[in-house]
Image (tube, rainbow, N blue to C red; front, side, top):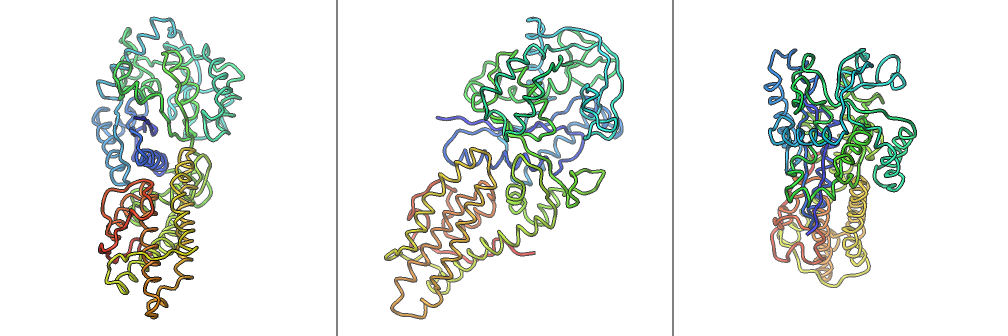
Length: 504
């Protein structure tokens, strides 16, 4: 049995889920669904990062206790993923006792081995990013992603000897060119590792921040939120002793946004190295989603798309499809309501939806809604069969490279080919010729069987609509992968008419 482990970011729950959260989670969910479809024992993890100064501050502004605030907001993420057809196998919360136990044990091990020490520190601190920053990171006096400039702080902190692992991290990236994808993010981190990166503060004094996991040997400090959150990738697996950790961790692939690239490279790789945990197999880094104005989506600019509203307006599957087709993973790109509507109308309604509607309607009209028995195939059908048979391996290769949009594009190109086949075969003309009855059976069967293939190939992307398509085709069983031609729709079974994607 082969195991595959996919993780989303562990989302900071100081606000409701936005489209950037949805983008990462939908990609991770689609990746997991494809891997599961081909037979891998796959685990998808997401979760809520609930500690730290931003949560404490937001809770105070809401006149709530931090725990109550975190409980309420974590539930909004659980509900959001349900509504967006993101189906994690595990939802980790950093406030869970079993997670806190793993964090405490890891801290103690590092402290006892000399990897953690106490020192006074003075520097610029970003409340928005919950970390100390350097002057060279600032643009116009603040981090580009922050609303407010950093504040000068001097306080005692416990530090993790991150700098001691710099040479190892640099060599790892040089030896593993595919570790971080796309490659521009690997190059960015390699450049950072050419110079000292310093050590990492892993605690905050309780007299300033109480909301966090206590440092096990010093009750006057709580754990830095990023040290806490990163360990939530291993705590749900029962690290270090449970079989799930041994089974799943060697295959782990993290899906993140580029705004947390440094924490998932400098912080996380050095932490895993110090703890004796093998580095992740792959780090998939997404770009920024831009509004219709070409600027990064933000609440303050009001240029974003609410993912739940978009799902209600255009349909969950249309949104999922747009997120992978419109913006190539790893690069910045524009997502707007107009973009979603265009993808819905053009790709899904005009191409796939129209193909399905016409095929089902002709089967009803010419064959009383019964799947016909195919007769002799000519070169056109042989080409369709060859393409349908070859697509699963093509799609899976692209999926493994996190090129989900290109994988879906391959299937949609097949759909366009099928629309061309309808036009050239002209079933409506065949139906008028008594001598062309066998030919009409073959054409209709070919279209129905090809649509069944499409439904399996696109099921991870649009699980609701592709299951609906299979029901319309009279093949309402569980979606399968790489079904041989002729084993999909069954001659004699009954199809139904339906509109998969109503145009807006």
